[in-house]
Image 1 (tube, rainbow, N blue to C red):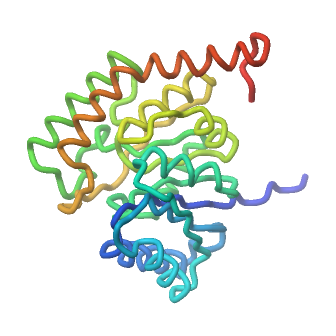
Image 2 (image 1 turned 120 degrees about the vertical axis):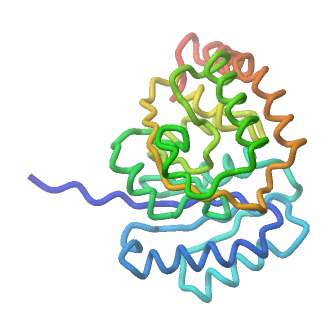
Length: 255
């Protein structure tokens, strides 16, 4: 029997005004690749979300200097993390697609934990084993996050304890099928993507991962409030998406 080839990995990094933090993250990624993790990394896609600084240029410069297979996708204006992730995932060519925050709050090597789940969708979680959260958020952010996740379970996706960890792994098929259907451009995009995954019948594995809070988080209080507002319309958006799809395909869900 011929062995299946090892899966290849695309890494999607949404980035807005990240010229200071991104070089450090890319250096960590290069060290991981040099230590033997490069065999399966086919591309690093930095999605510059309409940055006001040199994020895109810095990513390209550091990628070349470090020998990473990196390319930058540029959005003309700031459109939101959800829009940036969607752009990157739909452009990715690897067998597996890892989405990671630009600060690598979860170290890149943790993707191997997600891959070991052998699921079409595997998401990093800070809620299953809190001992792996080595640097915690401020108390008010933790309280907001727990309230948000309770609402997520009631309103959208029961059974998933942490939808908002920015470290998620998709098979290429699942990633493309999910994100071509998503509409939310900002911070509640995770909830919409996972609800779409459920509607499509994909298994979602929630895996505890190492996580270190960054004091320079890009999630503002206003952004957090926007996520709450988006959460209230997630089910309506997803229901409308699938309803329109059924009409367009004569009652069948396109894939």
